[in-house]
Image: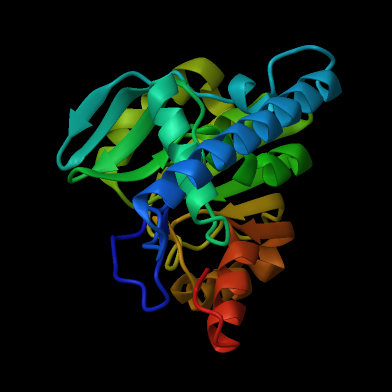
Length: 266
């Protein structure tokens, strides 16, 4: 996983939405707007959930099926933790989003989740938006796959559930993350998962091996400053990948383009 670094463009933490900005309205006007906005957002979310469930054939949405059950634990400055989001907290997120609709937000529905924390800061979680970030590589997975960045193992788990996947190799530079997360998947999937303790920017795949899917996820935040590293990883693995992608690359490009156009980072 990448170290926590500053972002010159501003950043959006993984698995959580940004706070609302200040407005020029009176308290009464804000209260009225908030009530109307919350109701609108709630109706929109309910309609969206119903559409997703119908599309899934009445089953739980795909993000729920891809949540992880990695045991809680601590190693060095890292920890795997369970956490809950209450209906009241969900409503508050909706309110923040409604009051500042031009700013991107990641609303986390009420429920139970797992997060990976480094020195008190959330690095990733198995919340809906974060799982959806990884649906493309999971859906493309077949044959030999390579994942740079273990995290909670959301992508690893999703890939290994695909019957056409022969093996998933994971490159992770943190020994603490490996100790916390890797045994869970090694016990479940055996030799179909290979864990390599190395830095993705320096590791060299075995000679003669080409991966059907390569997924790069070594960043903590959605930030345009990540784009040079994304380009660097793609160049490094280009000859070793049939298809490759980076976590939230399109969002990072959009942020860069908005800043370049003078519209702010959101």
